[in-house]
Image 1 (cartoon, rainbow, N blue to C red):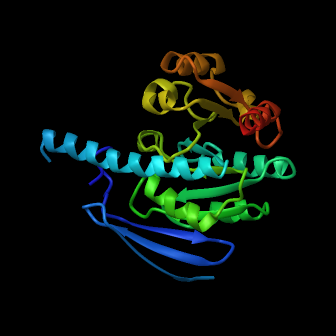
Image 2 (cartoon, rainbow, N blue to C red):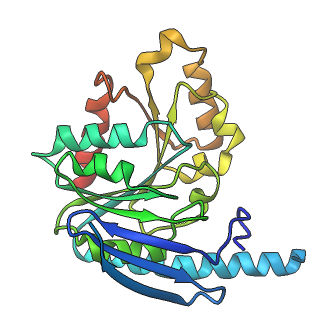
Image 3 (cartoon, rainbow, N blue to C red):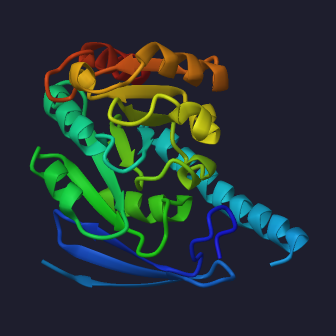
Amino acid sequence: MCVTCGCSNDFDSTITNLATGQVEHHHTLPDGTIITHSHDHHTHHNTTIALERDILAKNNLIAAHNRGWLKGRNILAFNLMSSPGAGKTTLLTRTIHDLQHQLPISVIEGDQETTNDAQKIQATGCQVVQVNIGTGCHLEAAMIDRALQQLNPPLNSVVMIENVGNLVCPALFDLGEQAKVVILSVTEGEDKPIKYPHMFRACEIMILTKVDLLPYVQFDVQKCIDYARQVNPQIKIFQVSATTGIGLKSWYEWLSLNRK
């Protein structure tokens, strides 16, 4: 059992390369052993603390490997996190479309089931690998390790990791990324940063999405920003609309600046 959230840590995950059709199935045993096969396809309190430390320690070791692998190829990876429906995929597809001639981007897409979002990403012409985690609720470093081998991103590029929709567990798991990015939409409550402080504290960037809907929803932007900075005074905030393009220039400039 994953002590950080209660989901099973003895679960199956599937990594699908949409370009080649290759599917890998992985089964993680309680001792951390991973069994892999592939084919082509069109308790007590003290024990719990020790287990959590063990799980996170193993994850962090693999994350460090991922970080070294990416650095050696001059690849920047960003971990995009949010609650379900905040607009991660829409923002990602718009970003890929607008920057396709300036910034080589490939994607690792995380969901419990389906390749729906990965297909949307692939439609932009972007290279994408889908990670389905079954009964799990977050991506882990070992999954990213295997997904990177499938994705094989080009040197001097950017990898966007779209994590599973969840504001709790993904914040705890280092994937080897350059930066964590939390996406919050104006259709959610402005108090999300203080309700889920670990997520907003872990992230360097907060992107407030769907700002074109502000005239139609009750959302206090300034209060949301104040809450976010109460939790994380250093957090950088962008206000954007992926449908109208509002605020995207600043987001793109930040990506380009970090790319240099």
